[in-house]
Image 1: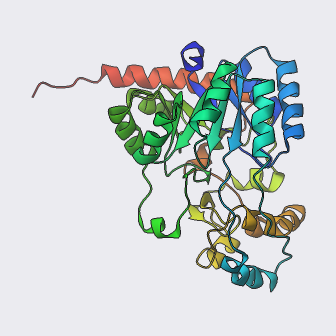
Image 2: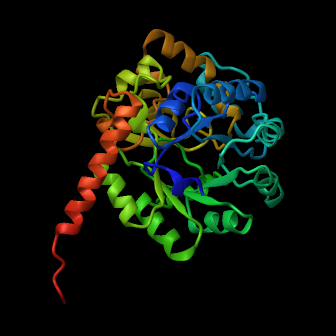
Amino acid sequence: MIIDDLAVPIVLAPMAGGPSTPELTVAVAEAGGLGLLAAGYLSAADTAARITATRTATDSPFGVNLFVPGPATPAADFADYLAELAREHPVGDAKYDTDDWDAKLDLLVADPVAVVSFTFGCPTAEEISRLRAVGSESWVTVTSAAEARIAAERGADVLIAQGAEAGGHRATFVDRAEDDATDPLSVLALLQILTATTDVPVVATGGISTGAGIAAALAAGAAAVQLGTVFLRCPEAGTNPVHRAALGADTPTMLTRAFTGRRARGLRNQFMVEHSATAPVAYPEIHYATAPLRAEARAAGNQDNVNLWAGQTHTLAPELPAGELISTLAADAKTALKAALSRRIQDC
């Protein structure tokens, strides 16, 4: 498996919507990790162009992440929310689409990459078989043991265990308002549950930003770690300047549907505080509806009306080139593991 051949057990999280670039993917791959290129919000044609740009720049393996489409939401479910937003902000068309799912799958069968990872659901067994037939591994992002069982039964090669600490969208297969009363599992809790209940390799993700964090996940049974927020300030990342500037501040994060209609973790700001309580479950409709107000805020340098996705350890993200960051994290992880092993465990 690809994980076994990595020089460094670090996977670049696929941060759709701007931060993910071929340059960042290449830098991580060249440093010995695995870069995942985000295809979310891109057409199949744009995805193909990014794959070509990445493949041209590196001979190392890399992967592509796809969003698994969910059902459309009835307009009546979000009409009141759009009216609420329109009183103060420009609002766009609350459209539904499948994120070019079929065309992207066809593309990745015709032009295979080492890994295809999935967020927001699990592909069918037949779709996983199509990818396996052309040599691609299927990695499915899960947030619970129940989701992990579904992915394993359909033939997933790797489970990406997303803890509550993770920045950006929750990868839950189904986003339900009634589940908000249940605390999402932390990465360490989820990792322990999955490694105890499945033989499928697990990659840990969520709030891991240091070598010590990597060491902890590996010691708990992870085959590798997937990191996102810690790469947002790298020069190779396409992070918007407003977002990049906000990451260094000691701002708390929170989960919200206010910007996209799907639960996501970001830096707490005025828009989230004012609209999270009334935001409906309606993705991608709300994502498209809020696009104009988010674009306006970015252009104005306004941090209060833009989604600043970030994990709980965002203050630890350094301003380093991705290759240098990988080397630092790997060295620090080795040091942390050695320090842990040196501690004496007394006999009971």
